Image (cartoon, rainbow, N blue to C red; front, side):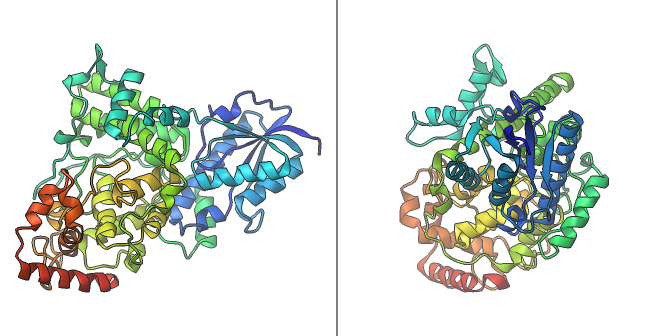
Length: 513
């Protein structure tokens, strides 16, 4: 085989036709390499739908590159036995006699370090390029964060609004406020959400059906279902999903973005996070579509701002924090929690209706929205003192939109407070009453959200008060948690003892809750 100039490696979450990796691509002397490696689905016990999404999107993307007339070396699952991605890469570099490996920044610190080491040990030049999908570079974020002792998303978000002239009016934020979060926390009440427009579905085509069959055969013991798989897997699909969202659901997205309801997995959410994290669509066009829809349909600013904040603010901030704090973020365990993840996290087989609903939906679709992740499955893991690394592995495994740059800082930093408040001001915890207010999950549950002791006590409520009791001194000194501690201090000694005993029993029997 003749010596190749550039081998361009395209990873499964880099399906951007305008990627920086393709700048200067010469079809006559360069080739694209794409790798399906079993290890990327097994280093955490990945949901079948997550694996299907990655593989089918990759295969569709490869078809598009070939249609350009480009050479694509596509290593399908099974072509290289059970070899790891980096081992397959090493073999293909040798096969192609490539002088240079071109790669956009990966979404995992682990993978980037392994590729750097491979190229260094084999004398291969690594051309690692900035990921232009994002609106702030890794270096740019590091420069911004250097100004702050404790980086905070709100300040970053304002910086990004000004820098990119998003929702700005003459140098001031549209509507006179930077943040409408206080207006976006409504529940549904007893009547529920009413009629919710169903999101656009994307039935599997022949390529996707082939991948589903492959995953069901090769990864049969993995969690989750592929029966309802209808995610966007191409750029055209993703653009259609975006258009559907801004036309039919963005209007009420903000007002009800924190609400939950049994049997309503999508509500007014966008269902485009997976497509964005695969790079099928980018944040600039997503933000532009939302603002255009606001102007065309006269949508409420609170909904559009709440959506823009997630894309321009939180998503970019989280990515920056991941690269700023790795590899230490992965090992963070501020509270020293060491309990095992309950087995029912993989089955949903628990008496707690809220956990059964959120986990059941996750296993069915590979999806749960941010409050289900933060204040149901995530909060319980924090209150139950689960080892952070086990929780992080679970989140990376079960959600179709999970890539480590977005999953790990969200879970370690936001959900579990494992990094000790590096970029959050308090742990996000609440009693079962919060879940009752924001959902119908408590209806018919064997546990009562208002009770913290006794046989009918809600585990979320009991463990919430036990968490405050255990960390009373530290939380009393934090203005964001001091009120919680004052409420704790109203509980008499006898009830505190009963609370501790009930919590101890629950913590010793997590698998039976």
